[in-house]
Image (spheres, rainbow, N blue to C red):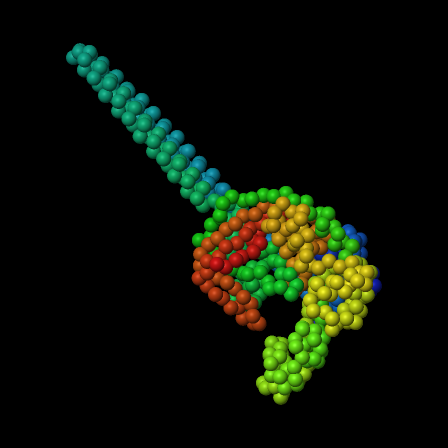
Length: 458
């Protein structure tokens, strides 16, 4: 079947027509201009809303359409889960109203029946009284006193029963109602779509419901499911902290992170790391073999087979002034053998007049202005981290476009017998029966709902 194509309205580049792109702003991988696809299959130009994003690597341009589809699927899944949760809340409200109406009707019916019974008893009593008047006033007084006592006693029984039933009904409804924090955990704890269960995609599903923030070159956040006996710890803590001045500094910078690999002879390696120069045989036996054994993908079964080459890798993650990216890249390669870590790379670039800020420094920069460490950690993690498993930095883009967070609410929670999920290859590995704790965060400028920020395993 021939696939329908549509052209970019800016440069004419062809793209396949897919429903997931309808109504969304998409950036052309060729000319980097934005357009929106209509239902008719015609793409229209979209004016940029803010400063253009820095040019990404060729690999990121190729992954952009896939990223849009994965993010769209994650948003659709999240909207379906939220809709189910809202329907459940509506059902609870209807149940509460129905129970209250039922109890009120029952109480009114009982009171009406008692009034009718009392009127009937009064009529009978009057007849008996008239008959017994001749027998003496003492008998009449005694019967009237007994009747009043019985009537008062019955009325108290009815009122007590109605009040008790009403209290029990209210307690039942209140016990079943969920707080917004508990609702967020319930939404997260629901099973993933059937076709992704026990597959690596299920881990991505749970991360889409969290403030997923995997910082480049760092391990992703822990994913815990089967949240048994989860309970809130203390009351929510709300903070106001305006960090816009610190984050606005990054609008004039471009983010760069890329693995740098270089090779050196064993002698250069020893000199670089301050290792005493040894004879050829001693070096192979004591140092070279040990270092080669630590390098991934390199084997050294014995000193004679060990090549006198050592590979060094660093993966810098830093921000550089816009317009100085190419200069910085050329300096990386010209000074490879002198690079030991990000700090040394930063020092070399600063000496050449290039403005540099390391991503690892962001949390300490924010800590100087934030009201506490929790706020600085949260903002730095989501600013630097990815929002999905394909490398999207949506939170970072939103902040730099003007959605600066200022209101933060944190809620601690914990539970027993959680299950730790990890995706490896085509399988999901689980470790169950763990005590866990976590943090819920609500940041209204970015998302009005509560979300799980992170888990920790005891």
